[in-house]
Image (cartoon, rainbow, N blue to C red; front, side, top):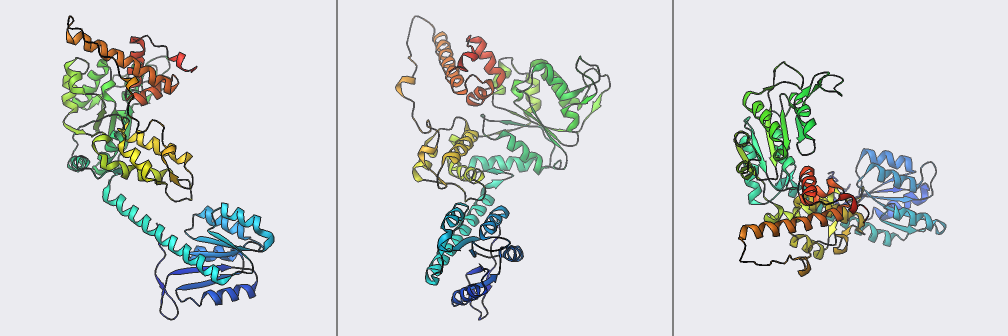
Length: 480
């Protein structure tokens, strides 16, 4: 961010604002400069046309440009458009004759702070300049506070002021100088990939590649080739040799996202790489050695999966050398406002100030449970930014279901039959809820498996398996 440096007038008084008058009439230009310069807190300079003004703006900072609209070569409107295009931190006040009011209104729409009709009322212009300077000073203060807030509560692109996340940051610092394998566990949307990036960027391997593999997004038939590569002719479509992700990550870090979705056959091959740091390409016989750090992530309880026989116990212990558990957003509610402000800045329209929240809108954000965690919050703010007016996010701009408590109609009936074992009845109730949940998610996603996976926090493969289990036709939801 660029702040206008402090300056002093010729008499040594501190200057609060630098004004550039752009006017092709020499008489009007000098007269306006003389009258405004009576205020010793203003430093007033002039330009005879828009082209000269752009040259001056490129050489030194100004707070306010007062420009005529009708000028040769570069008009006042073209000057304003170029200022907006370059993103110069200067407010523009336009002046025009009576016949140019329509153009002045257009200038306001392009971002001008105000417009005045000629002959210019100097006292009114002074009031406008004073107001613009106060607004600019306030914006600078807000931006400075925002920068300090970001610096205070950010760690490698991760924003948080939660004690539980500070413990995560401390773990990242501890593993920075090691090659320890790390397992990141957390619900969908908690920022597991950002943590993996932070580990890589703070490690001695930061100059090497960070290669990401989403184990849930690749079918079992392609996963081995993606991880380890293949030789020419290894299978029908293998027209040439291809390096796998482990080979590409040599000297750096490989991030295995959703490792809990990896098939058991592939788990055995991954275990060998972790143990021996070598592998063969599919269809190859040469053993390749790699120097990689492995970071794995999952939204599933791997320890429970090992007990259920769905994940190899020996691989679990190889991955779980150091575990980082990411808390869900509902357990770090002090971060909601901080993250919302960050996303409001991220999704503000180009050339405009960051979006603001009304107290009512922020209250809705703070009350919501955020089952989709940070990703859900980001999506909510992005959506609100599209529909917000005048840079303010109000409750009606947020997703309609935000903050709503579940109604009685959504509660499942819980019949009690003492003639049957509890475990049997619990299984039936869980299955009934799971089926209803999936149908509702599919309806919202209009039958799209990927979007349903995002909503439910499951992998695409898990969603497909459950649709088969409950005999649900996803295509029927596309018509709704």
